[in-house]
Image 1 (cartoon, rainbow, N blue to C red):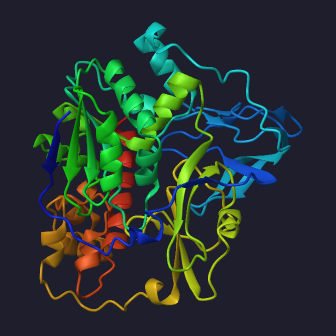
Image 2 (tube, rainbow, N blue to C red; image 1 turned 45 degrees about the horizontal axis):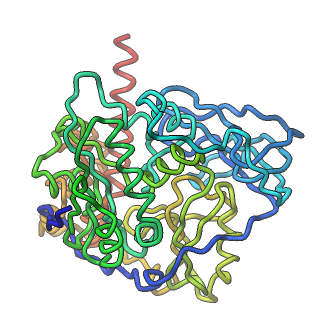
Image 3 (cartoon, one colour; image 1 turned 90 degrees about the vertical axis):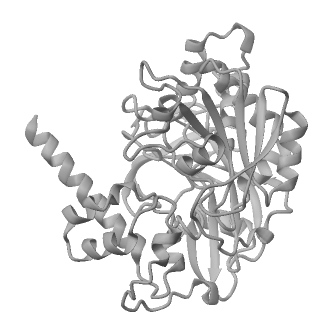
Length: 444
């Protein structure tokens, strides 16, 4: 095991505000009376419910079958009775098909949850277990793990990297995981290494997590290299993590496999370990509940389908001056107009802000200072992409490589005019993608 230091060009240094929860241990949240489990909580096709109203289900039982290769199975987070299979409001603002389950508080495990002997498992066995368990990227991207771990045929992979940066301000879920369950993180990495025929693995952790670095280093052997990353946002971006550790740059529009890399989040690796070694599907996750607007910040292990309002209540409720609730972090998270939505596999954090911290300054005219250009980790020109988007000239925005934007928010953070750069770029990306899809369908 060798510890090295690494970083990338660009980025910003926002106020990290991890002090609310960085010293806390993971706490199990008490089960709730009813869970609402969406059938779409991952990138790709939604699941089809395989249970009906009145059915009895067990904890970990399959309740939603993947709708295709790029999809992920969904399992019950409790044992009990299906109260409804109907559309409910979810955190993306959509009415999504959900399986609603009344909890019997017995946590009767599904019969399929059983341990495996890793030495007897073939690569195909491991792939099947990961796919069946409904694993997705738990850093927030929610891309199906079995797809990510199946690079295109003919692709040569020579770097398997775990992302332990957790650069998003306020969030400490991965930090807590690495400190308390380093054996699962490293065990999951080694399973991924076996699956991809790699003899060495790499873990990148930001320098502001010394206890996590120490815990991982203690268990890492000669097959694992630990990289201490400079504390800089967005150090946890997949492409920038690759550059920091390998020196390679992922080409525009390409995937990490194009430069021989596969990157997974540390929480995803721990879930790989749980699935392969213990037969446990993804039905719970670690969530950071934090910010100036919550009475008692906590790092919780939460059942999927628990309502955000109930999680907040478990943490003592909102403060009297609470103004905004964001799912995720302040840079890439999404503000909610209601907390009556369920936690999903992608709910990495619940950020509650008071009026002072939630205040948004009125934007003024762009002064062409180019601070957004200097901060952009993708080396784009955000002010021009946003300007063309606001003029509805999406073809021109595409010429400025709008689709390469990772929506990290660095540009908007440094903009002295407080322009809504990310929002405008996000609109452009949506319109460009929709147009290209329509053109492809027309050609067919």
